[in-house]
Amino acid sequence: MPRKNIYPLLGKPLIAWTIEQVQGVPEIDRLICSTEDEEIASVAQEYGCEVPFIRPMELAGDDVSGLAVILHAIDFLKKQGECYDTVINLQCTSPLRTAGDISDALKIYYQNPSAKNLISVCLAEFSPYWMFTKDSLGRLVPLLDSKYSTTRRQDLPAVYRPNGAIYIGDIQNFLITKSFKEPAPFPYIMRPENSIDIDDDRDLQLAEYFLKQAGRD
Image (cartoon, rainbow, N blue to C red):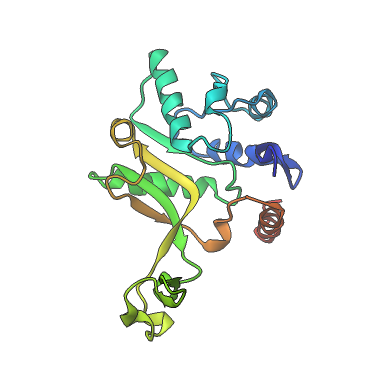
């Protein structure tokens, strides 16, 4: 989906859903959009988001990591004399995340003095304990310990997957580790139906369905 951040979703560009979510979170001091696209910047500003810079083209493209983009934003603000304690990464592709999700995630983060990172997750739809890989002969072998291969699903350990909706980190730690996963993050657990990450038209249709079901259209 080219330029999906401004793709229409129930009458609003995709990026607007994230902007409006943050506008309902008083704990967040400042919201900025990092983009190299002038049209995306204009749409973000239209919905009330700051665009203090246009991202350099060397940080554009599908092969550029999101972490590099965040590091650039932190560095830009620092050069403007603006320093913050916490960075929150909210990808525009998670329109079913709510302002309440963001607030609750921040509460978990700040209520744990040892927290350096938090990421949002949901229960994995399929357990890796029942999954296979192939060996050198092309045979299926258990991905993890084979002792779980006959374990009932309800008795398997709970497994969570990152859903891409919320990343929170201590900025000083982030500048050192360049990661939201070091040291081990605290989780904010979201419902699977709120964890859709827009990647293609099918995801968009699912998002529309669940937004309507939740009365958020």
